[in-house]
Amino acid sequence: MTRAFSLASWNVEHFRNPDSRADRVVDFLVDLGPPDVFALYEVEGKEVFDELVTKMPGFTFHITEGPQVQEILVGVRSDLTAFFTQRTEFKSGLWALRPGALLTLTIEDEVYPILFLHTKSGVEPLGLGLRDDMLIRALDFKDVLEAASGSVPNYMFLGDLNTMGMQYTYLRERDITAELEVLKAANFARGRGMKLLAKDVPTTWWNGGTGLAPSNLDQVVAVEHMAFEDFGGAEVTVLGWPKEPTPSAQRAWIADYSDHGCLYLEIQRS
Image 1 (cartoon, rainbow, N blue to C red):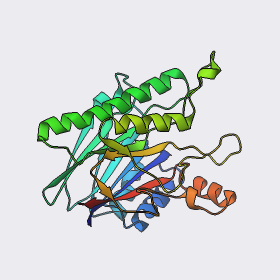
Image 2: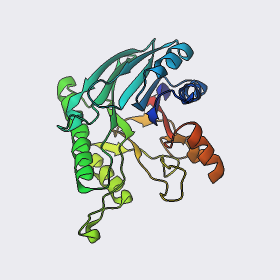
Image 3: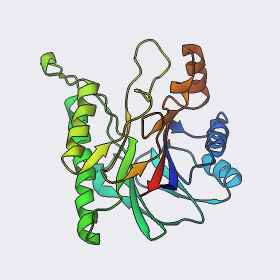
Image 4: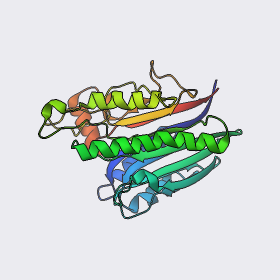
């Protein structure tokens, strides 16, 4: 198999440019190759565009819009045929939630719809309920694409899915662990002919402190027939602080870049 394109997905946490973090983040992406396609979540400041346009001249950029503060920015290599649309149904009826960012690539007559999502956070029942609703909408979208094309699409969705579990205030025995929420998402996907891709490290988020343990928040879901580069037995490699050798080095990376690791994967042509 040969590589169709490379893809990165990264929550850069309140991404603006008061402290030159935008410069470091863009340099990180450039050093990755850069990826053919990438998504940055929680973009809050227009200053980041200067860094992107200056250091990535071979790319076009798209961003979601609306009343929400945090946007999803998508970069695409300019020589790729791509169509970008904003999908408001993934706001689950709440005006302040982030819409989905749908990028449709066409590479050598193969079409790849890619949905970038940043779902509702929170460990309260409302947070879990909204995440479930957004997840089901993302899975149902496969059927919409299949009906439109007449065949199973090369569809995937990914991003910060905030799979952090739920704490039931008055019935703590009904709590749902983060691990169980991830398992539930995998089961949902399997029932729709999709798969939750394996990552080469178990966690993707940590704030660097002692109060909260590292968490597995960022996920990739793809239709079962799609193939990916192998990263030591995993389909996704998590770059950044999870690969640093010591807690002090991890904290330094988090301070310089983000408390989320960067998901990187390579989609193969079958």
